[in-house]
Image (cartoon, rainbow, N blue to C red; front, side, top):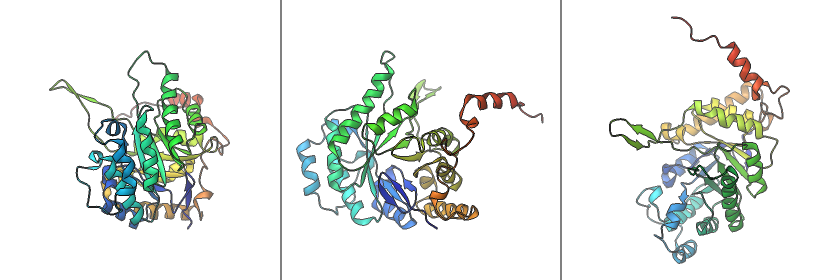
Length: 332
């Protein structure tokens, strides 16, 4: 059974990628993912706020790639408290010990000097860079064109700094997702991750305070990225990675049928542990065997816009039909 795929120009042994999570800062966790058969790993993000806080001057960061040995004691303070030098050391250690591509991650919202850190991630050995663009436009006077340009400016700054492949993890909130996807790819992105997941606040009715909680994604959240993977596959240049809602092999297969080159998951691995990767891969092989398929290429994109003869399920007419056919709740 041939599960190999290409993502961002990288050859992966299978389409499963462990997306960024705190556990991916632990070498033992990364080793277990590698042993279980993961196709690639994304390390925890370095945040724009970390780099702009001034906790580490750029002279020390510039020296980090050459001065930090490949193997250091474990990093303390958690993945999102790591100083940038330690993050570079993590990349070096991961590259030395893993057999799969190591993808670094930068999380930011505006173009400034922090983007030069991308070059150090490349120098440390990252095979690719995932740019997680996370920005909530809270100013009601800021036009959508300005928000879109902000994303393009960050991409341009990072693209200028590195030669390795760059993927943009984009949000689903643009007025024209397809157009923005094309502009990001034309602007230098080698691929897109569909989509990043905004953390949304709730209200504590007892304390009358806003609060945020981190909830792992569930399969119901895959519908929107599934739709846009299917709409973009074969119609835009560049790789497409699906992100969100992967719990079992059913979601993996659906994303591949929609046209994804790779499928990312964090929630399933956090719930079940790194060994669960074997369950997902064996399930994928079993499904392909049931379809008498010997490779991903035989099924990839079968349900995409470009491959389907009828597009009813992608347009307004189907929405109207569903509303008309709904019979309401059944009586007890």
